[in-house]
Image (tube, rainbow, N blue to C red):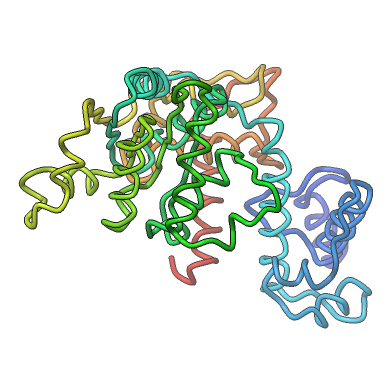
Length: 363
């Protein structure tokens, strides 16, 4: 066989078979990338969501004119463009699947947080929930709020980092309504009166047993936390302040050097501190974010448990399981015939690491 023909045959044999999904660890060809981009637009259009080239270019991180030329076949897709576009396609597909796999796993964390919230709601007192990052407190608080119509979930941050913004956020999250919709134009005093009246009216003769769950409270200013304390005093609404260990440090006697939080400390009747996730919790999260028929080897579960000991904890477990279940090519998992093992998770880890490196510009 001539040398050139032999080389062509070898290249053909080494490549993926026709119709085989591209390996996520290997960026597809420019033609495949264009086909996938056009498919993304068609799917979005069929769902009634117009996806413009401008929006696609913004997500990919490229010039809209260049994207138009590549899609129309007037320009060749560079290696950098293919890498960025492939990452955007994969991330978009993962977000599209959120509605199907967004189950909340029942763990010891969700049960303990539910008991804390129920206690503060029934006793109409203040409580505190602290943990390291990604220990599951946000998911547990959101799950309690979703299952309890009397609960109001508010996320701490720049949009709630003042007394006025915190009261306004509680108003909106509680679903209160007002004739003429003038609440947004009012100052702090008037908005405060609106919230107090709304909480009081909801209970008829008294004040309803409602509860306000404030996540990431460690990032709140003193004025925002004091507003929550005053709201509790005036309405009797239960309040749970949740955050990292920095929250506990601020509110303790040793950390409160200026005695600013003395009144808040006096009202915190119950404190729950969460540690690192237990092995049973890691397994519950892994199974919740995998297909119903998926199985895990014992070694894979140990791999995930070790992973959860670092920064990111349960979020990392969820991300690795979801990515492993979407791998293609030689890493594809057939959940009906095989269990997810360490090799699948290691491949997912490599892919996630590449995505992070490409976004941060480093290794």
